Image (cartoon, rainbow, N blue to C red):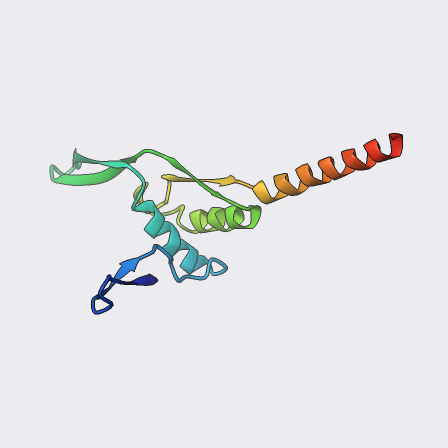
Length: 131
């Protein structure tokens, strides 16, 4: 976790505030899983506990999480990496371990901006040609 050092008015007191930067490499699957684990802490969930009676009469407690799914936006490469990390975790036992509370969504606003700019630029060229 990265920290931002703040200095108080008299310049004698400093303290560190976490700024929420995770120092992991999203190009590596295991580190992408760590990023998603950290982000998954913000997924709203409700813990459910169920007692299961086995055929031999013993009782086993099964604990799971009911998750409210949230969207995780990024470019196409980030979405692909998130899907890969979720694929690695697909065989885990609980929904939280399988990272089911995070839904990757493509948010290519840079592409939209570029397309919009190109459309506006081409419209200006057409107007100049007709004038």
